[in-house]
Length: 468
Image (tube, rainbow, N blue to C red; front, top):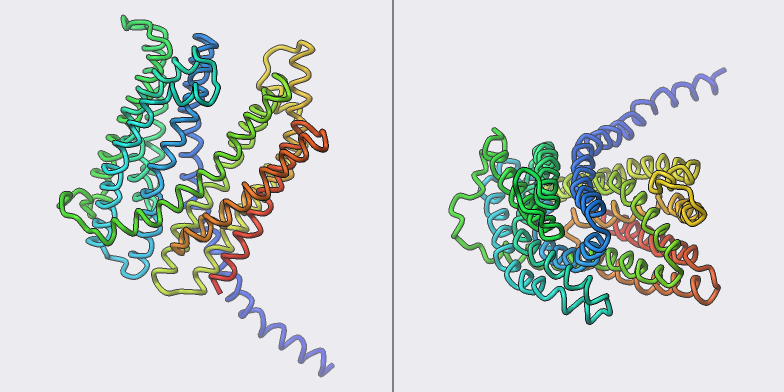
């Protein structure tokens, strides 16, 4: 009786300790969810803008759609380079606010130098995009399609700095705890882009029928609209307006500019390593025929949609980890990073189960008819989707791990890990399984899963080590 009573007393005494241990973790997870929700919806809205272009051009002309598809590869590469320095804004601002919650001058200087980085990087990138056609011909693309892509990308280049400026302002509003501002802007941009595509591609409302050129003009105009609308929203928001981010815009701050470029360059290369793996494997899939390539695109699109949830959680993790790091709160750093991993793992589990159970139905949504060729595409896409279902957890953990490290201003380490994971582990495995073991497209997808698994393990271990 005495031993039982003592055990009960000890257990009762332990309850407050357990609550003290787990309640902060649950509270942190809730903060992550609240911040990640609008970010995830904003990412999906950005995908909707791109999807509008694809649908409109597909209805206009298949060759125009093909030109836009290969042109977007070149544009996306340049966009990622320009995005690097502005991606550093969230952790830099979070560190500043973590150290001093009212550091408005510090935040303003960081934002100012982030915008300066766009002015410095945009001109050479715009010149690069003007050479899209010869670059694509050099890469052995069809000359006629390359010429169309060159015209399309040349127009997108005009909006490149404004597209990156929108992302910069979005990162600022997120770091300042106002993620819904970007959500409303992107929702309006969807409508603006749809109207522009409808008018200029097909020649409605008295406008000329411009086709691919019209799509380039409409998309470039939507970049300008999103940047200007974001600036207006930030000027109207009572919290964001206090920072007066454009005040003394011409005054340099070389230390912060150097930090943005240094961190951002590594972040940009990290994003390129991952993006180029998937782009290059799309070219590899072409070796296995039209059906395999179409099935690959279907599975990749579904996986891209489900990835938006963990990406939103990762963006929230950057801010939460950065705030704790700036405050010198090591326990808070660990709590934020691991809470984000837990939330993203839950999302990945739900998406993975849904993809595994409903793979044929999901693939069927992308194919309108049911000819023998269509059924082959659906069957292949279903196989790839089941592999994608298996790597949902890896994909979620690698992005949250990388972006939690970004919150610690650790960019070079994730860059090295990403290069090794995707190009030393992932890409060779794709090629070996596809061609040596004759698994074809299935081997490519298994290799992608392996690369993501290596990235998830290495990013997670690095965060665990640094957060100790």
